[in-house]
Amino acid sequence: MLQAQGDLLYTSYADVSLTLEKMKGLSQNTSWEKLKELGTKVPLVTSVEPRKKSFVMKLGEEMVTLDYTVGIDENANRLYSQSKELREKAAGAKGALEETRKAMAKREAKGAKAAQEAKERMAPTKRFWFETYKWFFTSNGRLVLGGRDAKSNDQVVKKHLGDRERYAHADSHGAPSIVLKDGAEATEQEMREVCQFALCHSKAWNAGAAEGTAYWVLPDQVSKRPEAGEFAPRGAFIIRGKRNYEHHLPLEMVIAEVLVEGSRKITCAPRASVSSERMVVIVPGKMPRGKISAMLAKAFGVPEEEISRIIPPGDLEIRETVGMNL
Image (cartoon, rainbow, N blue to C red; front, side, top):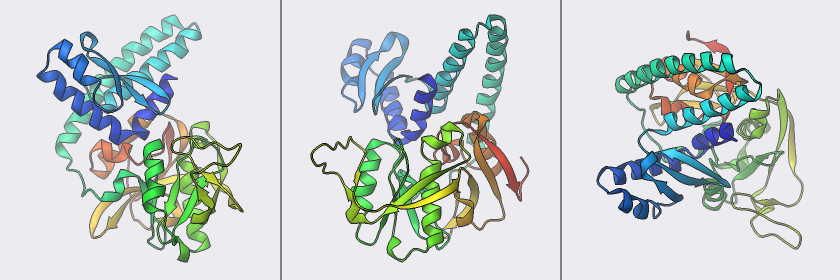
């Protein structure tokens, strides 16, 4: 549960980051009693505990307790650390747990210092409107957008799924809605890229699978209006008619440098869609995403949040590097 909550902070990155910023601002100039009152007026905040410098935030169906004095990475690391400790206690490894705590504290202190120093040195790249969503460009340069959470899942379909677009989704629940802009002219290769992107940002990544299945459909097959016996929760859609399946899609993405309107960006995309001299191939694994984010941020010379926003939710590992040393 705590592991899933940590992952949820990154899949709802924009909402969590904004809420932490608002709560930190309120806490600096407000009494405890007033903070309790004003804090619950902040969207998604359900309660505030000033004595513990914490508040409870509703993310989808989860109620997550966050520390408003630190950022999103520190909160996620706390959740991941607590999750690991509970697993080890359940296994009865009390002695090993104490050693792990000491080692983790040293690594976290060292990592936090290094991350702060890196953030001060690294300037962010140009921000584009589509970064509100998950994104990449296909091998023919078409923009692909995906939801980060239930709210943006609704938005990406309502705002961006027009007659000339195409809709894709992993063949499982708990996956984002994906929209291919100007998809009416897309090639079979592009549709496979889009379906792979949908799969890699689904729960299949956390499951550690090597491959999976996704599908795409036409815009008029996507509906929010359920018929008798159907139900569509927030962020979900009902698909009617034939689905065009893509099978044996690899659970693999690349982090690479690309140019977007003449500006340097770091993208996370299917390998077939990227032509770059510098890239890193990632697959599901056992290395914490925070550690990978820090490593890749340093390698590409960007703030860590630019990496953490684009990689799939869950742990991973680096399978291959091209044109760079890590």
